[in-house]
Image (cartoon, rainbow, N blue to C red):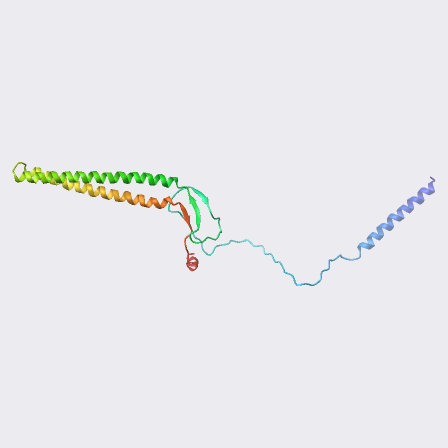
Length: 197
């Protein structure tokens, strides 16, 4: 290739590149490209972002009458509940053991009442026998008074044992409610709930 031919090819290349660049620049000055839509009724979505705290109108604290480990939670925070709906279940083993111990205490207290009643019956028979012997002059007045004091003490012991048995019975009765370890939703008047705040 001759030198002139090389210059000619180089000049043609320069003119071609310059022409292509000029065309590209002229096309880009046509304006901003836009998207066109037809007019129609549509839903306008408005989003507002804000920082703050949300407070409930009313808040209800739920507690159980028995202590224990929750084994089943039937609702989650924010769920609506109906009256009587079970909210959670508590492991009944601890309550059952307490009821068993209280039942044993009740049996012991009732046995104590029977024992004290037998002691009182024996003391009353002894006092009656001593009254008969005193009428015959066989025993002294002091022996009769001692027997009478024993009867009074036995009556007090019996009364104390009976009260102990009543307390043990009440403890068992109270614990029996714990044998149904489920917390249920109670009725709450919506108006009262608003005033409960």
